[in-house]
Image 1 (spheres, rainbow, N blue to C red):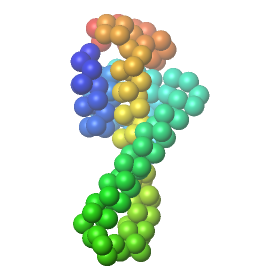
Image 2 (image 1 turned 90 degrees about the vertical axis):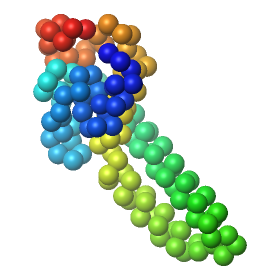
Image 3 (image 1 turned 180 degrees about the vertical axis):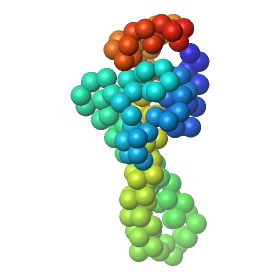
Length: 136
């Protein structure tokens, strides 16, 4: 599996392992496994804590960009109240919109860190036969 393909699949809201779609049951709820390859998305309890870390990083980046641009574009008369309102709105909107993406990015990052090409991650598939049929 091409390492950059895993990240691209995640950014397109597809299974990072195979690129299969229809992996979300609702906006926030990821299916237990990929319907195409059988890849198990949450292999252990607490696995999605990494997704929370990813979304927190995205929120901090968004807020930092807002703050720097807001100050740079309006200096010396910075509209602090306006920046506060936009910043608080951003703190609500980014997690709501970005959490599904953060879950998939975390799975892709985990695969990139712990996966060797040609090697199946332990406990990653619902059936070992599924992994064998997908050429890994």
